Length: 258
Image (cartoon, rainbow, N blue to C red):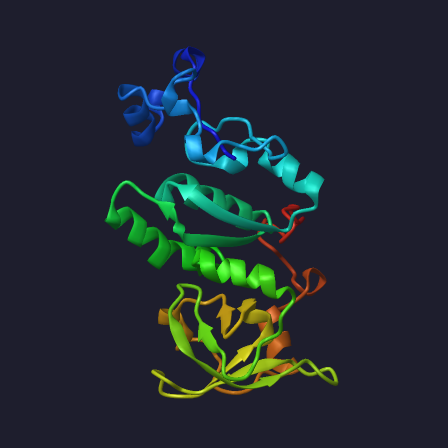
């Protein structure tokens, strides 16, 4: 549970009302004032005694609270996001979590926004790129109940924007040092697809989710089955093989010496 609450010190000392548009709106409308009903949980969503209640966040990003500490303590690697609002707190937290290496899933029918434009922009455009999966709660529950399921022939293949891109014709597993893939009939595309298995993020009964939006799938180099050689080309050079990294950051966040 991620509460929001504002005290006089937040505005007097930190001037949150001057930092952003949403900060000004919350200040003027007295939203989430500490001690008011607006800073309390909905009666039907009150935390249970054994559930974690995070420290209140002040603007958009729940990851700036004690959330990372709890995730590390629990050994959590996957973050499932639901709540309010789609284009602010939910999206900002998902972006931050993904940047820190977490597997982020957005439950689109458990997320709300102030208006339809903000909601659609988040779930249709931004979430499919920020996270690896956007799905409905029914599919998420089915995945939990199915456990560690593997892709099956005949399953629908859904992109990260929850749009269908075809059906699985064949599942080729990683064998003999090769690269596994899903063979998917051309459907609405001009060619068959060979989706690498490591693009599969979730498997539900009759469904396979991959982490690329449908609008981009046709641009992926998936016209031929993947090989170890093509995989190595995509991975790119190691640090020791590059003369100058131009101050770039490594995937772990450690700055490399040029």
